[in-house]
Image (cartoon, rainbow, N blue to C red):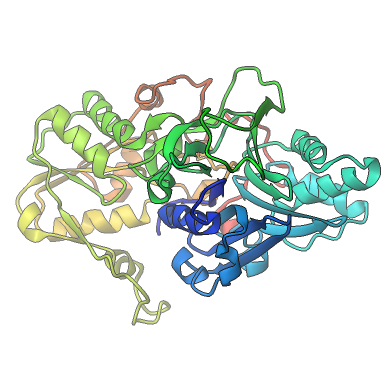
Length: 481
Ligand code: SF4
């Protein structure tokens, strides 16, 4: 992948007649785009024990040698995780869920997002003698819990609540304990987390609702920002009410949210409902709005597959110019046969997408992109379109220029590596070799989602207006890791 990457995806299942770990694995498979470097599942048995299986690789690879005991009929609930390993490296020890024994109580945790004050909590824990085994920000939640358990002898739930109150930034968490499963979304709701119900009985929680189609669940709703749901271990009987657990706000909010708008622009799958909106519809709307703001006189609209597809469709419909595929995608991109040190970067970029000369020759093209980050891949592709015979190449981007980094769970390059950082749009157009370039405005982007207000969405990578103070170590970027 050449663009920014999501850190992780979550799936949890409880109370289902089909073995929960198998449904979790299916739910992870549907969310593979949220993390490709490791996958894992933790399963709660009827006797309160928790077993864990995690490996590096894709879900299909990681689960290939999972023990049969994980899928036994006695399993009552399971939580799973797909990981894109940046924070803490990609060793399997940093893969999730993380399973620990907390004073004799097994607890497994899986996390999506980035806890922005993890560094300072980590140092505080180490000063107090805690030995941290992974480099992840997730592990600190378990250490904060164990400290409460030891100092105050609180139950697991109370320890969890106290730990949550210390966290800042983006965190959706699934916690598996002998009593059942907890699902939590941070008070600003950065990352999505949805609740689904299996009609025959059982509940599914997932980062994206696309997981529900793989588990037989029906979408119920987005878990609220600041909400904690508890699914008791013995609540697995078929349920008639919409929710059979407990719910509470663990931090009183000020009605401000910071849902990541970039989930809609780029990350989430079009078949998902994210923050209550259809990703497919939002992307079509973004394309339409982009066309209203920046129409172009062209012969053909073309997407950059795959994530630019729906915005291009919306753009094409709005300006009334037909859309065609100007690039063909190679779905079988694997290892390169040329030594990466010898291969030119443009050659590497073109392995995935190649222009279709017959479609683009002699045409004035409007290429619709979902986003431009470093710009290196875009420049190569634009050059390839010209070489294939395009007469003009215009680009329209379905989000505003990226000029700032992210510390809420998305892996961006360092700020000075962003092509739009410190540059005007026309300077970026010159570097990319375009006839014209235009971006969707912040207001236009927000007009495409139902809760269209900066009070509801984080737009910090476009505006620099961060909803939470940056970590004391500064804003991470790819070059720093
Ligand atoms: S900074 Fe950008 S990518 Fe990060 S949470 Fe905010 S909108 Fe999403």
